[in-house]
Each structure stands twice: as C-alpha cells, then as structure tokens.
Image 1: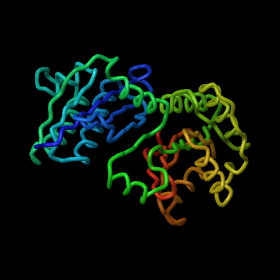
Image 2: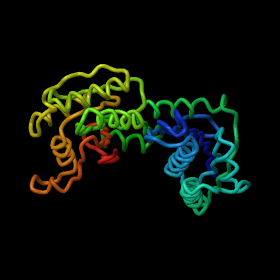
Image 3: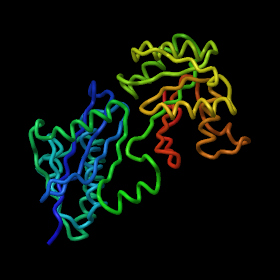
Image 4: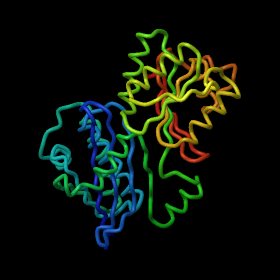
Length: 300
C-alpha cells in the first residue's frame, strides 16, 4: 500500500507585485504528523508566482520523503488548483513556466508509482501554510525536515539549517538622489518589520544607509569596519551573520566585492571580475557555519 502524504502550500505578495514569499508543509495523511516545512523569500513577485513556488516546494519535499507516495496537494489558490488540474488554461508565461516545473515533479512521483492530485481549500483551513508564507515575506527562510534519517542528515550537515540568516549587501550609492532609488530597491527585496540596517561612517555609505533606514522605518547601527575591505570587513560580516534574521549591510563597492569574493573563493587577482555597481544589492543566505548561498548580485 502506497504511503499517503498531504501537501499544504501558500504564497503571498505584499503589494502584488511586492515583497513576496511562499510557505509549504507536508503531513502524513493518515496520522496528521508534520513531516516537513519550507518557506523562502522571493523578493518582488506577484501573488500567483508565490503560490506556484509554494506548490513546487511542497511537491519537492513530498518527493524527497517518499518518491512513490500518494500525494494530495491542498491550496487556497483556485487559479493554481484549476490550472494544475488541467481545467483552466495557463496564459501568462511566468505561470506556464512554473506549472511545467510543478508538473515535472509530479511526473517523477507518478513514474515512481505514486499519484498527485490537487484540491482547493478555504484560506482559513490553509492557515499553517499561510503562516509560513508570512515568515518568508518577513525575510526568513525555513528548510525543516522532521522525519528520521533526513533530519539526522541535516543535523550532521549543520547546527542550524532550519532558518537562514539573510544578509543584503548594499554598495553605497553615487549620490543622494541615487540613494533614494537604492532604498526603494532594498524595500522591494526585504519588506519591513524586524530588518536591521548597519553601515560605516564614510559619506556615501552614511547617506545610503540613512536613506534605507528611513525607507524601512528603522535606526541605522554604525559599524566603521564596513568602510574598508580586508580583515575589518570580514569581522563586520561575522557580526552581521551573528545577528540572525535579515540584515542590510551598507558599504563601499570594493567591500561588497571583497566579501563576495571571500564567500565564493575568488582569488584576489580575479576579484575585479565581480561586477558591483554603486547602489546595487547582493543577497546572501547563511545556514550555520558550513552552507552559504549567494542568491543574487548586482541587483538595482
């Protein structure tokens, strides 16, 4: 008898399009036991994109638990459920691409002997996935598997893979007007609420950091170590990661380039190959001490 798994998925966008994120979880259908949770910020995206990304994450988690399971995917998005069930056409290119990704995962499940079907549920019944999507929109990533060997493997890999620390490195803008545009770009990526902003004391850094702080409604903490590349910036980076949550760090272009080079293992003589424009953003996620992901660079 095939194992039965229930996927609950949701996605949201504050502004639509705006600050977006998804949440998904997997339960044992028979017992109701929670087996996996996923949440991830998406930067600026539409609500429908976030909904599809939640479904994809939930199906991937179910496939990892049991590739041949009988999977029921439950969502409060009528659009996604009807499109994935084949009853509604998919006209938007972004939706078509994401639907193909979801169908590819579903095909892997069915080829292993399982099944996948989709069910619409009211929003109030989908509250757990909705809560995870709000965690994502607040800038936090959740990657938690609660079953047996998978959990042990995660604990061996890192002391804390459940929730990532998210650091957005911001290269100081070239002018006061440009600093305002940079602040708007940061707001679209991280949203508001619980975001910390740190920066150095150099003029351009200070102006950019204060514009970002005003946009996010938070005070800027001054850390002069962010003003110059080298050991000081490495120490400032370590302090930013130790804060947890989401941190926006404002520094000169060469400091952003140096931090990225350290994270990516780029030798000093090749650092100039990393494109970093004034006022641009680079996003990094850190899980424990062993896993670092550079999510994007040179975004404006």
